[in-house]
Image (cartoon, rainbow, N blue to C red; front, top):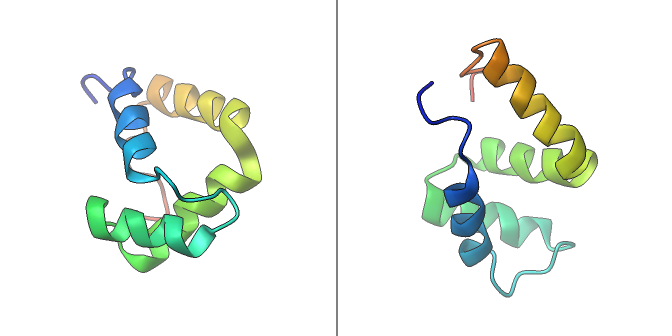
Length: 78
């Protein structure tokens, strides 16, 4: 789990990837993840849903907990 603490590069990558796509356009956001990030349709839809449903505050803390507990791949297997 080296360098897991630094996700700044991912933020910039996703900002560029989502440029021009509105937050309400979940299908286009998921499609962008599939095309550029090689995410599966199910995983990309789940990722967008997580972001929309929980937001940065909760997910930032969940990331910190996962890193602290050394959980790289969760139980769902994405």
